[in-house]
Length: 464
Image (cartoon, rainbow, N blue to C red; front, side, top):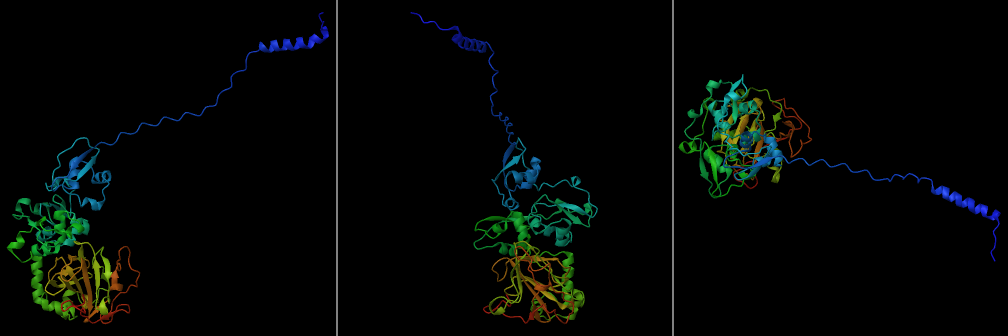
């Protein structure tokens, strides 16, 4: 028996079915966008490495030779090879340098090939002399009767730069015309010689034996200060102008120095006896007049421009050391602390090695000892700051330094407060009072003076 469903109960179901069919006919909703991370920008292509060539240094070639031949600056080569200034002085045969910005190797010419003078800037106050192999700044000073100070000042050279001079460098000679320049063919027959170092021989021995400055030896052989102090037996080095020393044991003098020596003889200066008298403060009135009169200079110049204080007045056992010791690199210049006249220049006083004594206006006396070589002779008048000698270690000395004494009225005085710009330590100037000495008869309150004292255990060295 079939059950019948009322029509009224079917109506809701039919309506729901019709709504479902209508919904199926509607279009699907639009797709929602999918969030994605932004794409990374493409990395720029890596730059191509700077081209370069490698150059192996040959005998005698310098960084300047290489830079000039490749038409690249010295600074660019140093930066590309991470070289410091002190590294440049140690370059030697076989060292490979990378030359930036160059694609082909070239032949490097030696710097001693004279630089054409016509390519150099015109001068109104002098002329160019191109250094030849074996020539030094001291040769030029002798040849043209100029002082080392004049040449250094005009060419803006400091002590380091003098040691770095090489053949081919054009040096300005002030006060002459280009026609007055001595040509290479007029130079001496020989500019030097090779020398094989003997056992125990030092750079000081060579400077003394060949009468050539240590800085000239260092420049000719491209020695660093460490190289100069580490000579080994059998090592061959070049002695610039060395052959003449064997022919004549007397030093080379300019006409001006020969006139100065004649003046010294007239004044009774220049002998060992005079040196001994001056060390004990005995100064004759005529020497004071020759030095510039009775007016005191007032202050003193620090004798070694970049020199460093080692020990001072009143140091040592029993306070015997009535002097100031100043150290520095070998080859640095020793300069006059005040204007005056050179009263002694030699090595006849035991213990002090090469020594210079200067008499100053008012009767001051200064002494500079242990020099590698002296550049002045007795009788020369010198201004404040004049180059007297080269810092060394001759005599009884434990290392390169200048032993500086300041003498007045028979006593050794402490110069510390008189030094200008001051007493220089490794990295600063000492903070001490400054004095000016004006009265010839009375030292300032801050300047101590005492009679000379002998070293407690030395029969030779007084006050050292």
